[in-house]
Amino acid sequence: MATESTDASEDSDAPEPYDDFESHVEQLTHVRDAGGVLGWDQQVTMPEGGTPARSKQSAALSSVTHDLLTDDDVSEWLDALDDADLSGGRQAVVREVRREHERAVNVPEELVAEISETSSNALPVWEEAKAEDDFEAFAPTLEKMVELKREYAAAIDPDRDPYEVLFEDYEPSLGLDTAERVLERLRDELVPLIADIEDSDVDLADPFEGEYDPEDQEAMVREALDTLGYDWDRGRLDTAAHPFSTGTQFDARVTTRFDPEDPLGALGSTVHEFGHATYTLGLPDEHYGTPLGQSRDLSVHESQSRFWENHVGRTRAFADFFTPTVNDHLGTDLSARELYEAANQIYPENLIRVEADELTYHMHIILRFEIERDLISGDLDVEEVPGVWNDKMEEYLGVRPETDSEGCLQDIHWTHGSLGYFPTYSLGSVMAAQIDAAMREDLDDDVDELVRAGEFDPLHQWLTEHVHRHGCRYETDDLVREATGESFTADYFVDYAREKFGSLYEL
Image (cartoon, rainbow, N blue to C red; front, top):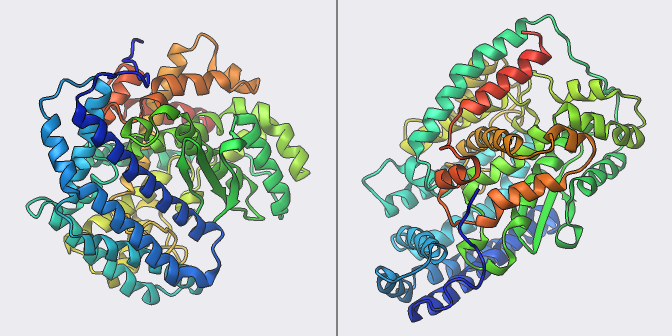
């Protein structure tokens, strides 16, 4: 597939304002990335007593970032570059910065700082509330964050749906209408499929019993990262209460967590975060500092993690390849078929999103999407969240949490002020299926045979060529079209889900 050059030498004769503009954008990126390192440290290594200082530090960096983004010089450069003769790459840089700039100039600096400080202070409050199963202790913090995010959305555009404005922070080019359409399609397609699975007489293997030493699990997931191709010179593995990945193409770190009773959970979350990190590491080094060296928003980012977690890590081919490693580290005697079935069980009774299976996961997303949309619109009060959460869990999955720790306190996202984030998880899963189908059509070698042989380089090369190397050159749908030859569609995910789970459960 022919693609536009992303070579660093393009536009050597760019108009003079562009060079100053790009230098400023690079400085902005460096400050923002420094804030990311502070965020990683707070979740991974910072002592508990460090929060008061860290919240001030994070707020200060947020203010500096906001100042750099809203600087009057940026407005002047953007105006000067309106009619400039720029290549596609530099046009993309201008487009991306213009969108951020136009949103940010309307948001007061003091509001940006207050949101950042509130988020930093919220983290230990949430952690304690979750540990103590005490939603009332977290409710005032959540209420303040909701109010701040409403104020933030109104500052950007007081005439639009505030939730739509917030959603665009995470997925600016697909549109909330697309997200709603995809979520509705998933609900319509998956609810009856899950019901058919529950009615099936097939019992998949559940071979893990007892407890498995976290040190053994860590050795297992480190070997998984080794074999999948994680670049340890530009990354590291740590533990966190809520696994995540963060960084740049020079330093992309992953975290996981270990449950003694659920070794597959550690493996799945590690492979998932590896997918995020390998996307970040695949971004072009030469464009670090500009949008051409940055990932294309969260739906695409999630497509990469879901590709590796589900379309590689949960395949029979991967089970054939990796089962001996699991047995070596955990002292088990599994067959590849048992590992494959264990990784693909559907269990609607599960309460925890990050532990959900591949199908019911989307019901967890729909629930959160509906709740936070109503919180932002004012149709739902914070104090009502636990009851509404539990009602929706019962409606969608037939199970009701007994504690708020297993319910509305389980996710960290609202602590960060990330309202509008959750839909990107399902959008990314849907996108991953479309990318997987295109890869399987393009590669001469059978993807399953490559995975079965532990040969992952061709997969990395395909993803880098079709997705990673473009950074933000294309908007989301254009990138999907560039990678797959088609606009974004849920068709491939629906077909994949029906085929895979229809076969497993003999539907």
